[in-house]
Image (cartoon, rainbow, N blue to C red; front, side, top):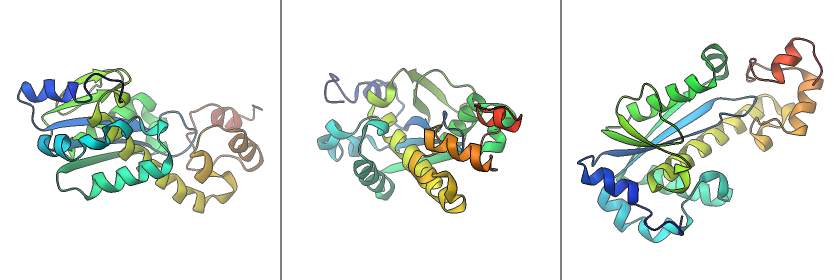
Length: 215
């Protein structure tokens, strides 16, 4: 984020409009074949984000681009601070199959921001239906907005830890490593062992496997 002219540009614009309780929203897990989709909303105290986190902004970016150790450290900082409000929404595979992944992602985002007192939100990507507050969608926002970056970290670390728990339940699938994505190892395990309740039955190639087709 260090190449952005102002890493708090979007936050400052919202604050200037009177939205001091501003949430950054992002999700993790739209693409995997297994596990939940997780959304997070992070609301910073404006003074805290400028005074305390400012020195680290150069390293706070899209969670997928950060080393795991750095993500875990930011997760600890964010969750332990009294100046940060966090909401998390989790939608499991069964509901993803029932309503589709886009609606499930939007529902998780609504749940997450609903756990905070945010009056406005900055959302990564495209506009979201059904949020309990107004919002601004920012394409690649997880690399442009500090609030969205923080939400990205909360969502990814939360989901990764859930996948480690699933790995203990289904050790033959390797969830702790690939986190449910369709890696060669995961596809081989699906062929050998079949799908579990943790899998998204509507997602290819899980659906193809259930229909007896080879993938």
